[in-house]
Length: 267
Image (cartoon, rainbow, N blue to C red; front, top):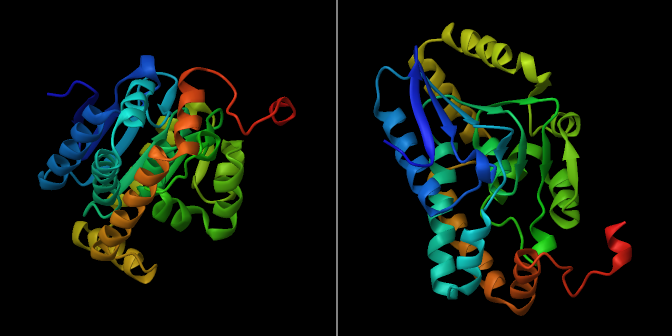
């Protein structure tokens, strides 16, 4: 059914695997559209009691792919806003999905990949996974994913990672709350299955209402989230077409140092 992912049901769990391993499962327009569709299908299916999201190959999701970024760098501000809104819709759908969601983080996650993790109810990662919110290195900000990342790791950690763009490991991701636990790579499937077993002990209606309760008590409302998404889409669109954003994206695509960086910053 899909070109960029595999969606299959294993017992009562819909397992969605991002399937662009040669590109580290990076986003493009097709992946955003297909993942949105797969989540909608899982939500409608009465046989599905939970949704598991993972990646094919050695990576979970590396954020936006190079060709997509090149297209956005050349696009207008209005086109960039529409692009950001499509990703925002996907993240909002995942965050507020009526069924429990599990991120099985099998490898590296950067940018939008971290957004997917933050939107899931439960996140379990391989101990060898790496993470980064590296947008500032491109003259950009993690605008679209920011509500969910801040909710997951807290304001204090977000303030550091948003402005430094530094890479961190699974142990640190667990310490700040992005992951609930990290396990050896060969124990990842067993750890996820244990979570699924624990969820099955609860009633389906109770699980759904428990998730809604937690989101409500945390101040997350779908209608308010849509309003925030619109504001953040305008922000990222403006930055992508700005002089600094164009320089940052150009430097990344041309594999050179951005004009604001000196050699000392690379050591």
